[in-house]
Image 1 (cartoon, one colour):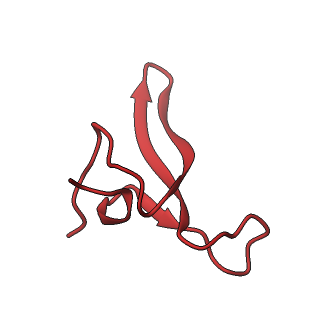
Image 2 (cartoon, rainbow, N blue to C red):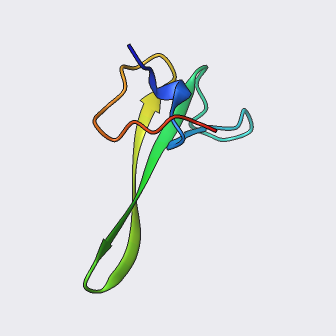
Length: 58
């Protein structure tokens, strides 16, 4: 089973950030509509189960 930490959409929160927790990061996915491009972000942890948008890191 894939985990969020293995996904290209996962960005780890730096230790210097106010909401830092061990293993915490943001899942950032790009979207596009008639107005243009935008990004959706949600907090996740490295060990969380991967979602439908899982994309392996290169």
